[in-house]
Image: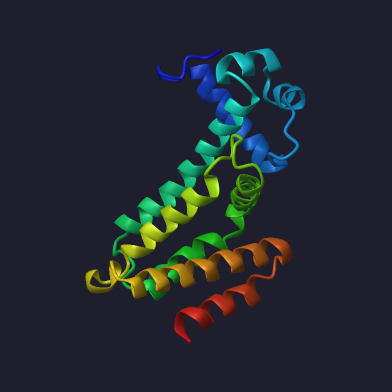
Amino acid sequence: MADTTTAPSARRTELLELAYAYVRRNGLTELSLRPLAAEIGSSPRVLLFLFGSKDGLVRALLARAREEEIALLRRLREGTPAPSGLPAAGEHVWTWLSDPAHRPLLILWLEAYARSLLDPGGPWANFAATTVTDWLDVLATAQPESERDTPEGLTRRTALLAVLRGALIDLLATGDEARTTAAVRRHLHG
């Protein structure tokens, strides 16, 4: 079993990146170590050694996906200029979410989100809840301080997050960027 208390080896990091590219193309739901290992130039035995188990690999892949989400959130917080107000933050987030280049990551995110609800004790544990908290926290930074810590401030952030998440799911299902973008903008500015 791999020692997760030390820094990851270069080979582990390399295989994680290759596996991450693989699951972005193929998804996580039916992940099987044999085809994954064959495609990324490894073996199931090496993957099990480096990640401890299939669940350990899934957890590492989810953590890797979350790194991309956290990078977006960091850019929102540190943006120049930072989005001011929920409508501006919502517009900024939606522009990123609706970018076709991000679809593989977002499909993976949706898959992990749903799995964490269906299998709360597995490697997906808390993925959905953590994602909600991450997004609510970043949206809070776009609110005026006088509103941020109020029940109304939380309600407004929650409503915006629900609209963005719902529009994203609809966009991923239909590919209809014009309709979903119009709906998001109506909510933001209507």
